[in-house]
Length: 287
Image 1: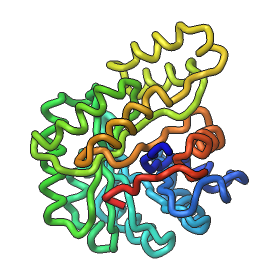
Image 2: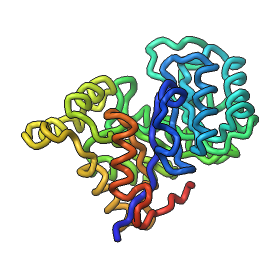
Image 3: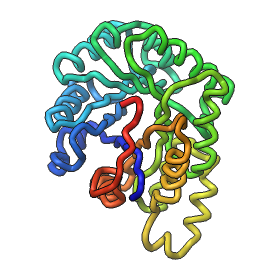
């Protein structure tokens, strides 16, 4: 019997609201992250409400640089909690070069205390195992240290959710090295779901996942890979093997970016046993 660690998945607001396939596509209680790509407040709330109504856990993104001011942030947090039953969020910088308002970092958003005020019980923050073009590795680590300290004084449980990549061993080393740096938070490693290699190459370039891009390109050179597309198993299996053999691993879940579509990603997760079908599921310590 194989051991599988849990998985969450990401959808766009449009998919959350309109997809006829979404009911029953994922197991009940799965975290479904809802991206913020500049959507209007009411669209994001409607998306979160439908995800909740389908018995999944909505995890809306709060992108700091897309927020205009504290009042707008409070309005969105309050509406998400009261109208969509949101208790779990992802707080990120947002990627814009110039902030739209008064927030330039996710730490500034966390420090408002608004998530505690409106009963948000769990908060995900971003991790970048391969670095980011927007800041240095040292700056990224310092930001994680500040957020780990914030976790000690917040009512919410914090976790790290990383950008996707293709170098499993590097991701494992990065995750487990955080504790040596004073960051003792659960880590959910980002992986790309099944997709065409050309699609992944495009998204990897857009998202700054350059350091492990060479691994994907090597696989793309295989004729079989070009015919069948990318399989995430080469990334996920080493992660699960490590978690199975390491009782105190910082890694507790994977987070799937479904660049090949939510249906394909869901089918892969079901077939491999992550979402049931007679496999032993390792329950994450952070829920």
